[in-house]
Image (cartoon, rainbow, N blue to C red; front, side, top):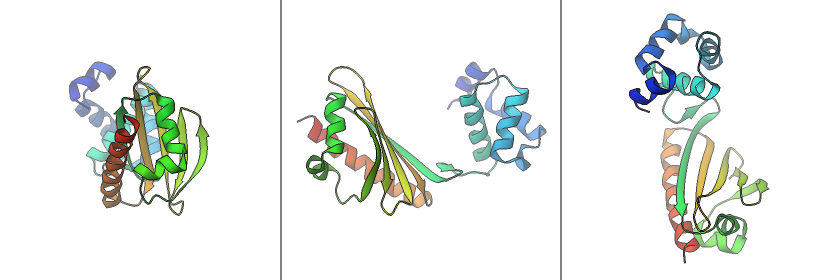
Amino acid sequence: MSDATVKARTGKSWSEWFAILDEAGALELGHKGIVAVLSEHNRVGPWWRQMITVAYEQERGLRERHQTPEGYQVSVSKTIAAPVGTVFDEWTDDNTRTEWLKAANFTVRKATQGKSLRIAWGAGTSSVDVNFYARGPEKSQVVVDHRRLADADEVARMKAFWTEALDALKKISER
C-alpha cells in the first residue's frame, strides 16, 4: 500500500508509524503487543491496526511476506462472467469440479450456498477459504485464501496451482 494512501487514511506515513512503534519498543512486544500499542495510543480502527502491525513486522524483519502467526498464506482471485450461483455449483458438484480442479484432495468442512466454502486441504495441515461475490447478474468473483502453508516455497507453488485452477474454472464457467 502506498505511503500516500496510508497517510490519507490514518494521518501518518509508514515512516511515522514505524517511528512511533520503535519508540514504544515494538521490536520486543510481539504481534498482539504492537496491536495493543496502536489501540491504546492512536486513533486507527482494527483493520488499520493489523495493517500497520504487519507492515512494521515485515519492515523490521520480524515477519516474511505472506507469513501469519499460523504459517503462510496466499490469496488468488478471479472475476468470471457467470452468475455466482453457477460458479459456486461448479465447486460443489464433484463431476464438474474434476474438470477444472485436477488431483485435489480436500474435505469441505462448511458450505454456505452461493457465498463460501471452508475446506480442509490434503491431510488437513492447511486450509482453504473460498468466497464468492456477485459482481452483477452475470458476473462473479471467486477469492481463494489458502492458509497454514509451510513456507514461502509452498506459497509460490499454491499461488501457481490456484491461478491455473481458477483460469480453468473461468473457461468452464463461461462456456
